[in-house]
Figure 1 (cartoon, one colour):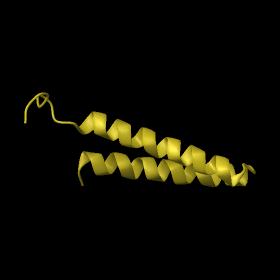
Figure 2: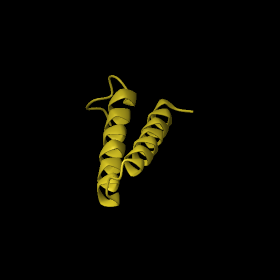
Figure 3: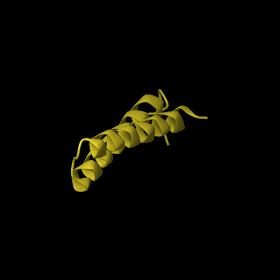
Length: 60
C-alpha cells in the first residue's frame, strides 16, 4: 500500500469514527456531512503534501 493510500484510508476511518460519535451525540446530519468533508479534504491535502516527490519541482 502506498503512503498516499494509507493517508486516505486513515482520513476515511477518522471521518467515519467522528461521524458515528457525532450521530450518537445528536448532531444534525448536515453538520456531520460538513465535518466529514472537511476531514477528508484535510486528509487529501496532507497526503499530497507528505507523499510528493522531492526534487521534482519545475521538471517536466
